[in-house]
Amino acid sequence: MQLHEALSANQPEVITRWRANVEGTIAPDSVLPIELVDHLPKFVGEIIAALREQAGLRPGGPSPETSPTAAGHGEQRLRLGFSLDAVVREY
Image 1 (cartoon, one colour):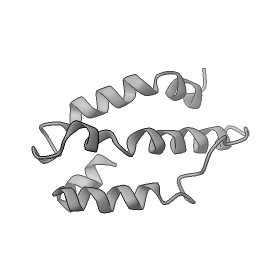
Image 2: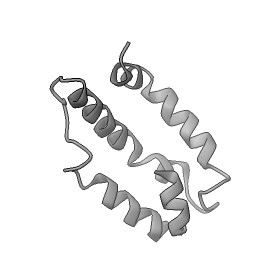
Image 3: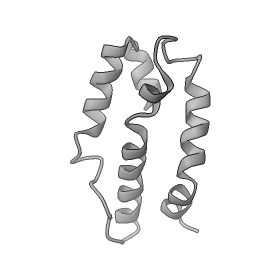
């Protein structure tokens, strides 16, 4: 199984584990769970697309290099009270 296949098949578990690691550590206590994971499914989809492209397959979605998701996510995190260091560690 290639990495893009594993990530695609396990995306809900990856997001659940990521949320458990971020809550109570780098995320401010005031951030609601829905705000914490809001951009993550799209971002993971972009990672899957990049991995598919790297494997010589059609991406099936936008590449992280051409999508505004990461920039918008970082800006939203700063507005929610994440420190710059926390935004960088989150990525």
